Length: 142
Ligand code: RB5
Image 1: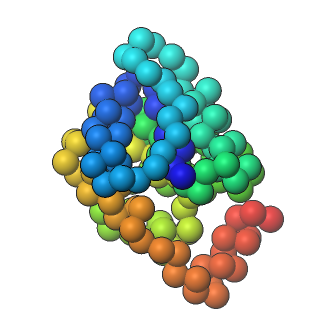
Image 2: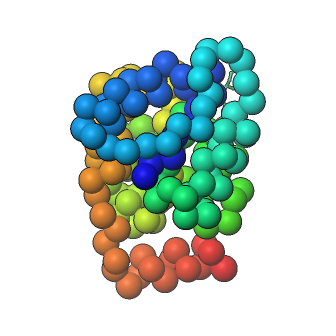
């Protein structure tokens, strides 16, 4: 199960992401926001981060205007490795190297076509399980 969260700035792109997930029969739980009315992004970053950290969802996608604020907020939760990605290479690499468990996107930065390619790469790329990457992730946790 994928946890979804966004603020008003991320809402239009989240609608595209949800369409992609539904077209591809990928299950998700949407933690909001549910409109373009102004809200505070830390609240939604926190909801999704806790859903992932607590094991309710395996991974998450967070979207705000830049992807920066909401990823900063999510990364405050222990066990969360939220990666802000604006290209497909980074999305693949952060799964392989960092075992990122949340993808963050910037709706005012990254167009929908590229964003959906990034989502696809993030969801389809497994962690490498390489010893050196496991060691480095452990160092982050410590
Ligand atoms: C909201 O205007 C905007 O600040 C937010 O979406 C995000 O870009 C913050 O990092």
